[in-house]
Image: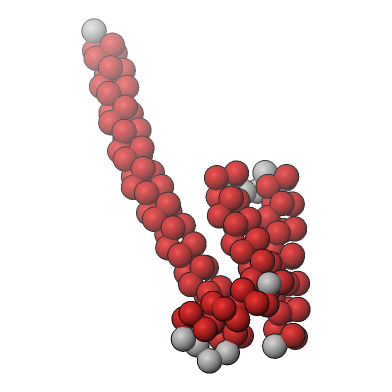
Length: 119
């Protein structure tokens, strides 16, 4: 159990550092970094607060706190991946709409050029 908590603490610290470096270098936008920072802090908090983890395992009815930790972490990241899937889907739809508007504008520009050349 202690080894798992130590590894989880290390992973959460590495995740925090990576997000902060990416944010500083503008590789990630602030609104997306907040989710990752919250996940890393939650992971760090769970890995450092063994009594909270044990109480959560009892509340969930799980026999061991390592299983509870993995379940909580997996659920947290699953929710984050779903959120980002929704964001990517919206961006794809916006990209399609933008491409259609550009095509319409190009058509109107070409129509105006033809009208001015014919006149």
